[in-house]
Image (cartoon, rainbow, N blue to C red):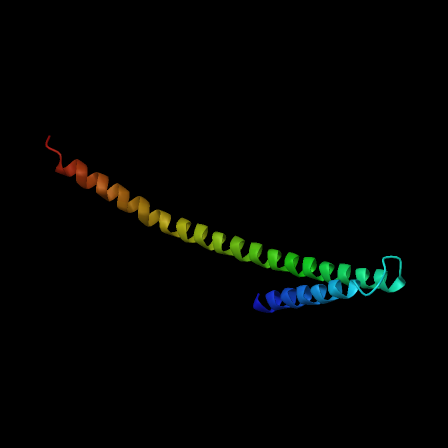
Length: 96
C-alpha cells in the first residue's frame, strides 16, 4: 500500500512539473499536445493504481467480515447454551 501511495505522489509531482512546462509552448504546438498526452498518461496511471488499491482494500474488508461472521457462528452454540442455562437458573430460583 505504501509503495502505491509513493507511486501516486511521484506521478503527481511529474504532472506538476509537466504543467509548469506547458507555459513554454503555445497551445497549437505539437510539443504542447505531447505534454498534455504525457499528463493524461500519468493521470491514467494514478487511476489504475487507485483502482488496484481499492480492490485490495475491498478484498481485505470482505475477508475480515467473513472471519468475524464465521467466528460469530462458531460461538453461537456456546452463547445459546449459556442463555438457556441462565434461563433455567432463573426458573429454578423463582418461588413456586
